[in-house]
Length: 260
Image 1 (cartoon, rainbow, N blue to C red):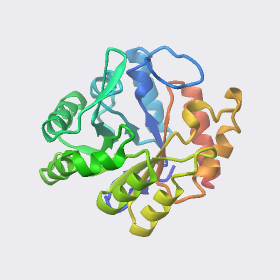
Image 2: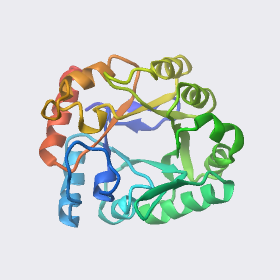
Image 3: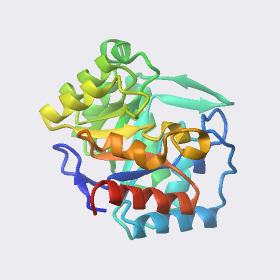
C-alpha cells in the first residue's frame, strides 16, 4: 500500500490502519461476535504481518485495556511505526469515565509515552465522550495537547469526534480529525469535506461498522464499505482485527479499491 501524507502534518500513514483494542480489552465492546485476547506470540506475529502487508499505522488508547503496554513490549521496534493515541477516556472496572483537565491530559500523555516506550507520540486525539463542543469550550484538553506538541512530546493533535459541529471545529483548529463514516452513517460527510478544503488530516473510525459491515454479520460487505469510504477525501481507515486472515483480506480489498 502506498503511504499517504496525513494533511499538513508530514506524517506518512498507510490507508489501512490497525486498531488495537482487541489486543487489550474484551469488555464493553460492540463487535458482532466474541473474541479472545491473543497471547504475546500471536500479537507479535500480527504486527509483523501488518508491517509486511504495508501497514505502518496503529491506533491505541489508554481506554483500550493494556493495549499500550503490549505495543510497547511486543511491537517490532526496528520498524518506523506511526502511533495514534488518545487522551480523556479511562476504562476501569468495566466502565468508562472521562477527564479532560489539563493535569490529567499531561499525566495521561506522559504515562502513554512510558507504556509505549517512546519519546514522542505521532498523533494524540481527544477521546470524546460525545459532548464535543462542551469539551472544546469548557475543558483544557485541546490547549494542553497543543502545549505538549510545542514541547515535542506529540507531533500532531486532534480529536476523535462524535458530532459534525465538533468535527468541523477540530479541522479548523487542530491537525487531525478522526470521524465516523460508513454506508449507514454519512452524517459526518461535512467534516470530511471541510478537512479537504483546509488540507487537514482525516482518519476514519467504524468504516466497517465495528465488524457489522461484513456480509457474515448481515452487512453489505467489506469491499463495498471500503469503496464507499474511499470515494471521499480520507487518509486512513482504522480497522481492528486480531485475525491474520481478515487482515490479509482487508489489505487485498484496499489495494483493489485504490487500484494498486
